[in-house]
Image (cartoon, rainbow, N blue to C red; front, side, top):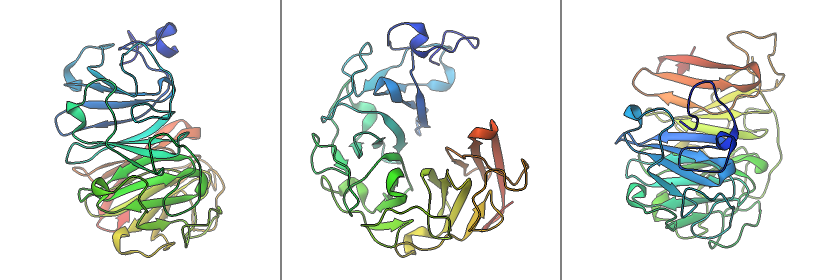
Amino acid sequence: MGQADFNSGTANRGGSVAANTFNGPNDLVVDSFGRLWVADYLNNRILRFDNASSIASGANADAVLGQTVFTTNSSGTTQNTFNQPTGIHIDPAGTLWVAEMTNHRVLRFDNAASKTNGANADGVLGQINFTSNTTGTTQNTMNGSFDVFGDHDDHIYVLDLNNNRVLRFDNASLKSYGANADAVLGQTDFVSSSNGTTQSNFDSPLAGTVDQSNHLYISDMTNNRVMIFNNPLIKGNGAPADYVLGQPNFTESTANNGGVSERSLNAPHWLFFDNINKYLWLPDATNYRVLRYTMLQKHHLL
């Protein structure tokens, strides 16, 4: 998708933005009906492909959010526009969540599959309205909201990249505009943003996921590691991680510590957990590879 064949790779197929092009596809999710949603980051839009597993290569998208038509890609700070949508999540109720790094907010689209092209969002976190995009380090503001994901019980997590923290919103679909977060990891309070290399700090947390056993995985990019938190819903603000991948301990951060191996990482990016096979998939960006970790026991990844 996004190109006419497997041998092409230019942005927007070397031409203008269209229903079958991408410019910087940054994240994707598949919902329970087989619809593929793609965050087309530099085109400032989200594309939806119905029956994605059976459509032809280079096919047109079926719907677009962030633009009213498929042939524009302007950015904006309104109820129906985006400015660099970097992360997306579809929850079990069919609600689409979109993290916008440059607007420092997360937009919510209820019953997203029924939305018409360019439809308005139904809610916002990180801003008190749909027309502001200020940064902040408080309980209800963000600075570089890069990724969003959630569990099956309406808990939404936001990777607040430049604040070096992860915010959690409980009963997220019911939150009012600009509502306070309910918990934070990476900082002991909601007004700190320092980075660190400890058991309870991050340095540019880029992406995350949660599995069905309620283990939280955070890609701590600059620390070249993945932090794992067991039972995050009962952890206090700034709680320490339970396990680490990519480093021998919680105080080292060197890329490929000890050399490139099955235990090393170099700028880990997106995460995906396969709940059927119990695999954690991890793009190890600067090592140009994708790693698979197998969960052998409930609390151990090897």
